[in-house]
Length: 318
Image 1 (tube, rainbow, N blue to C red):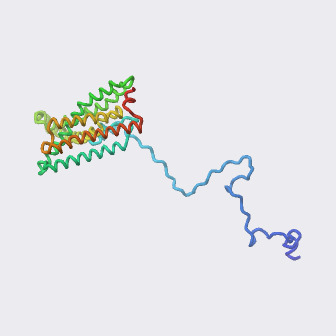
Image 2: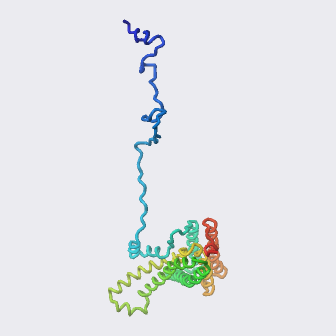
Image 3: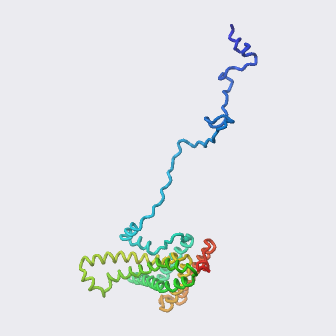
């Protein structure tokens, strides 16, 4: 029998209109329905959604571990051998929930740098620095001015903070008094560090240094070096953060800074600071600092009010 009949192309089972078997040349294989290869047929009553399949060789990035805050004991231990870290703990505000405005902090940094550059330029322009001895004298004068600023701030601090707390209503007074303890601690820390330096260098205490002997002198010397680093860095942080009065409330530092800088300008006028500078340039230099700081304080209060909803009236509960 011919291969073309009885199931061939011409047989009854595969007549003239029959198609060649699957897989022959000229015919595409059947295309499976789209979808997941193991998906149930359409209409299956218990069909479940199939999650999208990701790239099987994708890199797995484990989540970063949360930052662990060091314990109080570790902070104290680190501060014992690092006076700069101890100064940060003592003079930088750290109240939980406190508003931090990076724009204001950047402007304060630039104001400090430009103020220092202007002061150095003023000294060089009017021949205040012509030798190594003059450099030491100018540096000592600048340190004395910074220390005077701290002393004025120490005297102004209880008056302004006391008035702010007294003007508050309700339970806010107790809250602000409790928060003011950190600012008071910063004041006491800077005073104690300066006292330690006097213990090592004051001529009046030479008898005490002789009484403790060589081991005691070594301890006093190490403590003096630690205190110098702590005090110098602490003075800068105290002036920038205004003795961490932001721990009391965010509106206190700009108010206190504005009052302090005008007091310092008045002190410069009374004491006749910068006598080698002509009167016109001296007036511009002395008034430039309070005007700049006042403008900065106003802008900081403006940002606190418009960006964070903090005002003096709301802080006082009025």
